[in-house]
Image 1 (cartoon, helix red, strand yellow):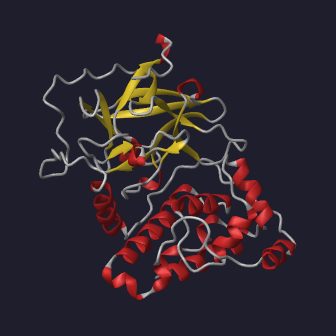
Image 2 (cartoon, one colour):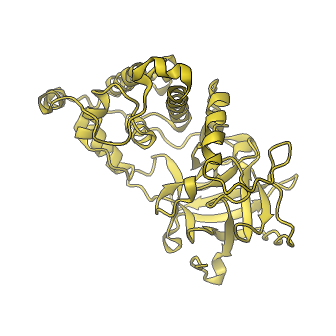
Length: 346
């Protein structure tokens, strides 16, 4: 496989058709067949049917964000580059909802599945191509910040979308920070080992134990009894905190926003400490609504970690979102590991 620095750059895409073309170019660059891509995704703990890839590459509308993420990862692209792919996809989807974006029907985003794709014979023909031997997976290396020129557009769209789910009680100040409720704030936790629990779902922050130990270590919400690896809080200077991990084979690590992305919706992942600067440093903000607990705010954006739309689905990605005073999915508690807590229900 070619060096990762020479992977296709999706920022050249101006509409959905060109974005699909870049995805096809990425597949060609990976030199992987549909069957090999499905196997790669399975090793990452994801599902990527061959027919789904064939349909995605044969249509002229934007695929779902989750599908793009799995496909790009299976092709062997690193976390920083993945952030760029997802930001470009969000930008194109945003433009499709604006008045000027309606001029090109190819920029429209499909409703989910069921879009027409290539015939089964074309997928079989693509599968018949002799596969090349894939190169080694990229290891968990320090991540460089992705230069995302689309951040402003993505941020504006995400804020508008998030407000549609808000309960209308916005207590943000002029700088965008959300004021805590008037009740007595909860005391900060002491440094130590914890299960970090999302209050709305009673699920805990966790990686997905992967078959390939060198795969991207995203952070999800999962049953607290299945948390992997061990998580802990470390106090830093200036009132900041680090969410540290201890992987049984990779050693010490830190959770942070991959690629130092400033885009709303960017995923939380685990990597070596001090590889992402302020993107792996957090403020703990005590709140008492919609429940007592803490918001976790990445220092490089001052957004909030959360679960999109307050989902309670197991193994949903933890992402950074605009802080909203009544939003579900943005409040966390810390259950000390030595207390035997396994995620109390509300």
